[in-house]
View (tube, rainbow, N blue to C red):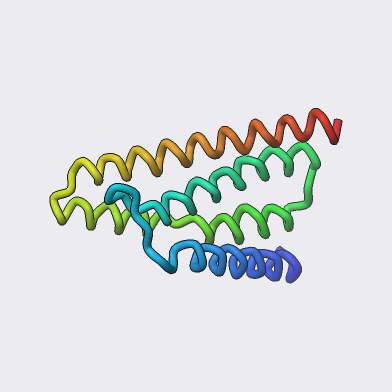
Length: 129
């Protein structure tokens, strides 16, 4: 990997980490369910799904993948925070909220990737092809 690849990876990571920090700095819940990390994971999954289609369709250079997928989405989405929040719910005997947190994070993240890829395919068909 060339220095430009490292620079783009670092730039994407800084941008993703900053945005994640801004989105989760004030904890928010919806009926007791922690939603900040849920939102971050869903948005990051959507961006990654969209980028996966556009990068292939546009035959983008690997450096763009380093910036967007590895750097930005890698530092923006947060599996460890999801695991910590889920464990906190488990340890406080909030089993229903724990199960909802798992289902919501996994379900929304998968749905977001599918939605991002669908949007990417539409964009490729309408504007690129």
